[in-house]
Amino acid sequence: MMMNRSNRQTIYKVLFFNQGKVFELYARHIGQGELYGFVEVADLVFGEKTSLVVDPSEERLRNEFSGVNRLFLPLHAVIRIDEVEKEGVSKIRPGEEGSNVAPFPQQPVYNPPRGGSQD
Image 1 (cartoon, rainbow, N blue to C red):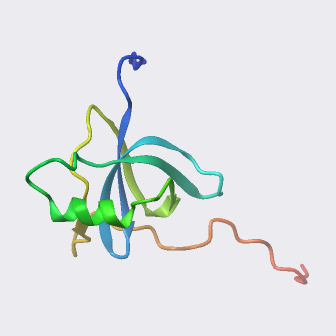
Image 2 (image 1 turned 90 degrees about the horizontal axis):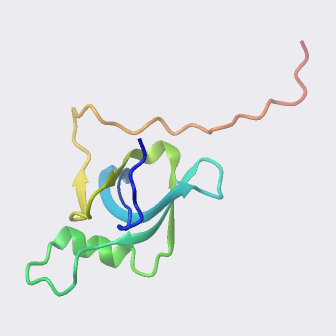
């Protein structure tokens, strides 16, 4: 059953691995990237800057991704993408030892056949 989205802006929560940490970001657009094997994330959403309570993790992410129009995430780094009702707080969490969530081994998506082999 499709939901009627005409009266609201769709928001996605994206969880992905980056340098041994789990990043949680919110965005308005998600799609198959123009680059093979990448997920395109665009229009990042952060909390209001006028808030009195500032989350240092979200502020770090806001600074890191300032000026970024689109993000291309390797498919194997994406943990999960959820469509949510409203954005939450973007954050960075350590990749926990013993966790049941781990990045895929980094292997090429396509291995071309080696030339010169004879059967």
